Length: 506
Picture (cartoon, rainbow, N blue to C red):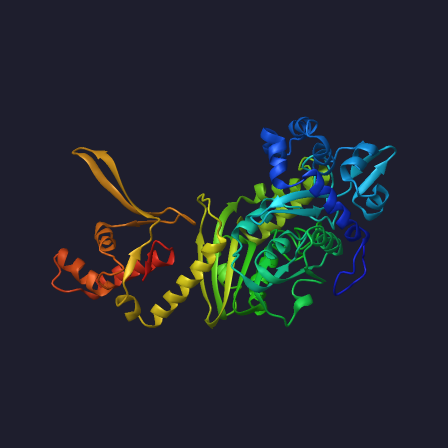
């Protein structure tokens, strides 16, 4: 593996092996769809880290089964069996390149190589072996594979066509590989030379052209601008130390997220978008929204922050210890947990929030909407983020000129449903809640009253503007004229529904 500092990758034995490796993987059918069919019900066991059902299914799958056992389960297999499954790959070259290890007459994988379909067909991703199938202690420069966080960011990333994309802290390169589906040019950076070694091979294996640059944080691309920045940084909240570069930044508490959120806008071209994972500490007596807001520059950013979960500190520490292959019951791991929890206690940390941060470069004062999105939903968030920023731009214009909203016609989105909840009472069913429910995207819900439900019922693309609808609503409720308070309340509700996409201006 190359270890010298460099501005771009220069090739390696592993990268040189990739053309033959690609032929072998294609010939055997080592792709996402075929793997799913070959494993059948055992495919779910693969995600659960249960090797026995996968191994039993793989034994019946011929050469594909050999590669499943070799590359996904980490089994040691006879050299002749591996040579047949990987032909035309030369096993001596594969060992020298760091793909395989040889022990006598058996061969074992030295790297994880798995197929992934993120919507554009199978891509093969190289990474270090994890401990999902065999117990391992991870090294400091361990390169994580495609985990839950990576997959969630893939689903949450906007994929509209753009010119340039930066993948900040690329790791194994999965986000950069995904970006080639919608960008003309992709740049990926990492401080970990081993990560770039693997990312370079991953790009070659998939016949993709990705610019790879080594360096810390924003230094390798300082002064450049991109249409989109994607980041899955080492955002783990904890003491200022580095045990594993994939998770630890060396910055105290949520310093890594603060750094990326504070400076990412400097890398965005006008109108450019950022999509990243981040975490933030919930401090005693402090609103997490204000904490994240304080990280943003005062000018030039429209930000949308979605908190997906809040973890208890003890659960958080235990989860990340196990993620790195440590047993929390081990004395050494216990000492690390004590230090970690001591740092949380000293800082007044009551919980750790986690979620998505979206940025859009503007030429206006910074605006932030930070909200909880802890309920379940199925649709990817990427396209929703673009629509959110489009709605946000319209709302920004309305803030400067409310007449834009009053003179506009609105329609209720076709995915919006009206739900009335009745509960049993002394006189039969009693109405309790009127709720608008968006059936797609983040599946937002808004409780409204009957007057607002009536207002929305009158919205038509060829109907009356909002001002006239509100006037009719006021008359229907016994007002001779629209009071300032009535109008302000109605407008506030309408704009809130626009922000979440339940209604839209025509």
